[in-house]
Figure 1 (spheres, rainbow, N blue to C red):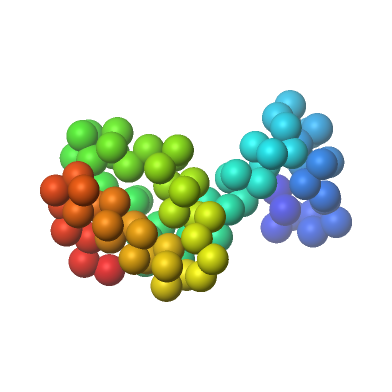
Figure 2: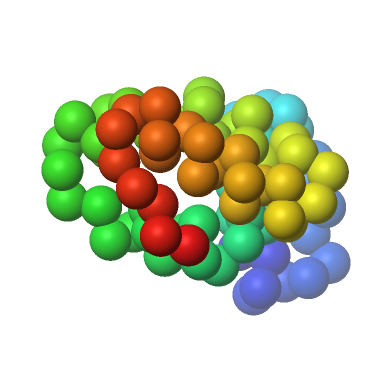
Length: 87
């Protein structure tokens, strides 16, 4: 949506889709995760891993101050599941 009309504000986008501004911010923050983290998530096929790496947990990772910390946090989250995130 934003790539189609860069003049849309988060508030306008929220109104257009019937969600809160906070929800739009949450989604935008997830989209700002490093590409290697996103690629790892997209490639997941194990249903248990998909459930474990929930949006709620990923929002905590997205809140990290730097991409490096986000990657480190994601690796730790994967290790806590018993998986190796080779990113």
